[in-house]
Image (cartoon, rainbow, N blue to C red; front, side, top):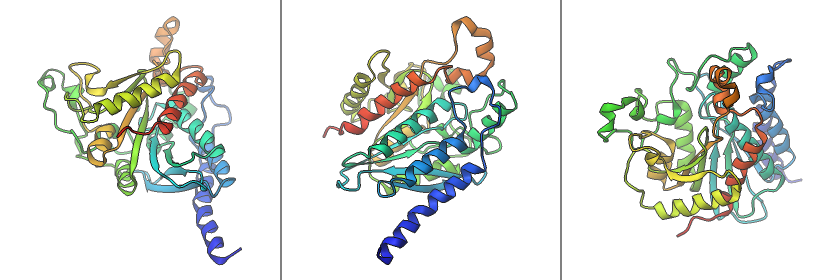
Length: 337
């Protein structure tokens, strides 16, 4: 083995070792409550991914793209078939909102598939958990049996909604901002005010991502820009084509593609990540609202009091499979010229 090869392998191993060490410091509780059966805690999730990545060092690169408010690394996995030249890059990220555990489940399942069968001609970057601080706070709540605590933001004081912290289309222009101001709010701290959003922006600036997906819950839609403007994007036809490819791949109970600002005539999502990635970098960016809620009509009272259940169904497997099917389709479907 040459010295250069040895140095390269050591450089690749360092982030894996760091991630495994981080995961070991964040184990699951010995007796997790039954309300989260079918879901895994962040430490075991990321530790298992690191172990799988260690088996395929030529195909998987792990990178810390930044640190959170509390100083936790934000991990990204770059996966590609090393024997095939890369022609496109795709970005997938999850765990933007603290209680949306189902999004992390989908990202992890996708990563496991990609590591097992690296994509040919594509480099896929997956960030399984962007809002590490918020997720760890909800894990503490779950471990203590506190299911009546609502959390959305990160570890800042007060917590910041990362999904309203981006730079494009931040300023409300609709008349509805005066009537329903809550549907037009952005972060009061200014654009890219948080380390997590700055890390994502810097990553997008370093790469030429053709397509991206941010994973959320709930709703059952394949949203695309604009989120903060009523006008159609210039690439509206391309977004519809890509959205329909994902819809077809999901089969029964598929999600529908829709421009986010047209979800309701009174609604705008200002400072959203999809507008930022599309408006600043030209990435065909989607926001997938996974599931149609985990609230069960026959247990309406108890489920509405359990905030984790709002976003995360009791049986996550079919929802994970539906989400991954859409992601597979987006990875394989090139953006039309």
